[in-house]
Picture 1 (cartoon, rainbow, N blue to C red):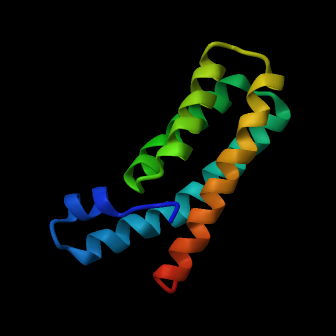
Picture 2 (picture 1 turned 30 degrees about the horizontal axis):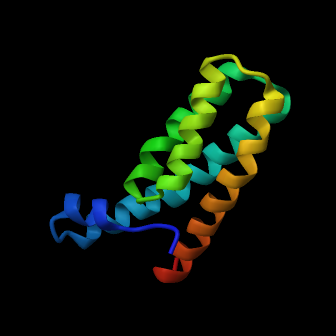
Length: 112
């Protein structure tokens, strides 16, 4: 499984409505941010690249998606350091794959 609800369950303290709310927010916001990041990587807007990568991290962390969170951090750091786009862009497909897989699994697991 690419995600885990351990952190959310701990925060929810048994409140399943809270768990579903967090999952819903993830499913609404993360695809939009991911698409925006992809667009900025294509256009080469370094400032937006690191801001969008930074914005993704808390959601990925909350869903227990450590490899994806680490990739987002790496993209953010590379953007902040103004590293060449040719070095940043290859990181994105891995991040996108993990996020899209998690979205599919969440929708399936929770019949959304």
